[in-house]
Amino acid sequence: MNLFPVIATQMGMLAVYVAIGIIGVKTKIFNRESLDYVSKYIMKLSLPLMIFMNTLNGATAEQVIAALPMLAVAVCMYVVLFIAACVFSKSFRIKGNAAQVYKAVAVFGNIGFIGIPLIDALFPESGMLYIAIFTIIDQGLLWTLGMKLTTPEEKKVKAGALSAVKKMINPAIVAIVLSVIGVFAGVKLPLILDSTLTKVGATTTPLSMIYIGGLFCYVDIAKYAKKLEFYAIVAFKMIIFPIVLFLIIRNLPLSQEIVITLCILGGLPSMSSVAMFANANGSDGDYAIGSIFVTTIASVVTLPVISYIMGALM
Image (cartoon, rainbow, N blue to C red; front, top):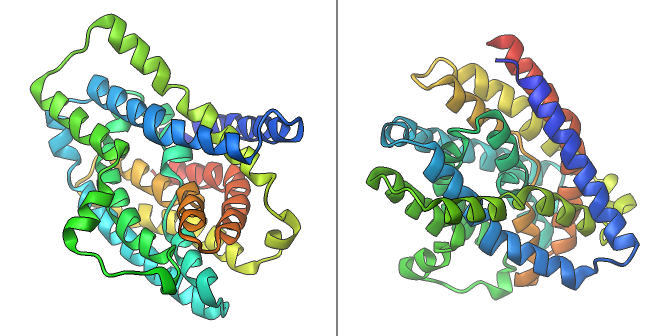
């Protein structure tokens, strides 16, 4: 499968969307408050609808069952990435809240805003199913480990298992559960509803990247572009890790589509939600935005590169 043209085209489109977001802020169409509303629309409405509709329309019960081994691989991926993040944090002597936020941005990839459009473009019929399966682990860790890492020590409170589970219940998780149930039940929506909800979900990709572009206007680019620890994320998580992962899991009893999906998701830039969590919890949100800026810009090159290498190794 020739991955490079698809990934390169998608990254080019995403770069244009980012530029539109920057122009939107510079021309005062957007401000920080309006970008927050865009983010809420994406996370609570368009993204869950995109996952729900694409999974419901593009997967079968047999495909869901066949994709379940992704869960075990996803757990292993996050364990390796977290260990690497701890090593890098100590190596670069990052202190305070920034050290914890660094671990979060080094572990969690931008699945919602970048991973989904890429996988959807590569595998339009089954891609959202793979995203849905992977997101079970991703969201579970984000709302437990991710929340812990983006909360300052003085604000941390002990919470029970029930509280942690409640925090994990969000529109994306609900969409995943309902779509999988719908697949097994053979649910088909009426044409007018199917068409309308699909189009609303399709707004996720352009708006998510416009949001990221706008967000970049509120970060001290010169300050964070000089931080070497962010380039450690680029080198390891976004280049070395996905290639090594590919060499390992291509020998497992997984379909080629699942192998490619896992490697692309493993090489994504830092997750935008980490900055949202850090800002909401009173941690170092600007530091998270700095990582998102550096890694997202780098991904325009790294994702096509790893896709080319994987294609050559198939």
